[in-house]
Length: 106
Image 1 (cartoon, rainbow, N blue to C red):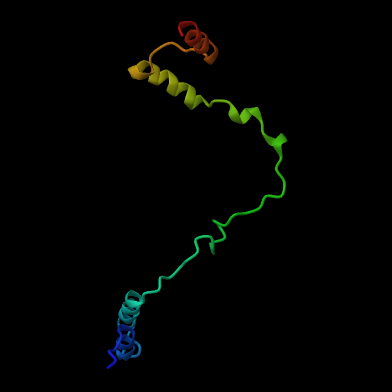
Image 2: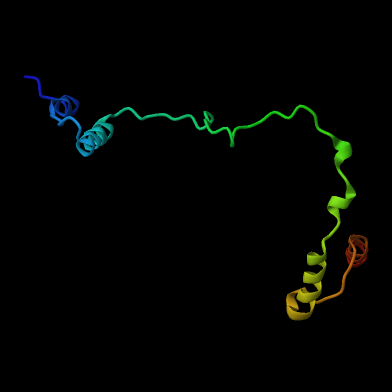
C-alpha cells in the first residue's frame, strides 16, 4: 500500500485560473513542503550599482596633504568640548612626551 506524499497532494489541488492569491498560496505551500533548500549565491549580484568594479590605474601622486588638514568645524568642536565637557579637560601632550614619561616611571 502506497501512501500519497505531500507533494502529490499539492499537485492534486485545483487552482482556479486567474486567481493570483490562490496561486501564491499554492506556491507557498509547495515551497514549504519542498525539502530541498533553494540556494542563492550572494556573489551573483545583479545590481550594477553595487557590483565590484576594476580600476585600471591608481594615481598615488593625486594624494594631497590638503585633504588631510583639519577643518574649521573640527577645530571649533575641540574648543567647545574642552570648555563644556570635563572628559576633554586636561593638557595636550605628544606621543614623544608620553613615551618619555612612561619610560622614566617604569
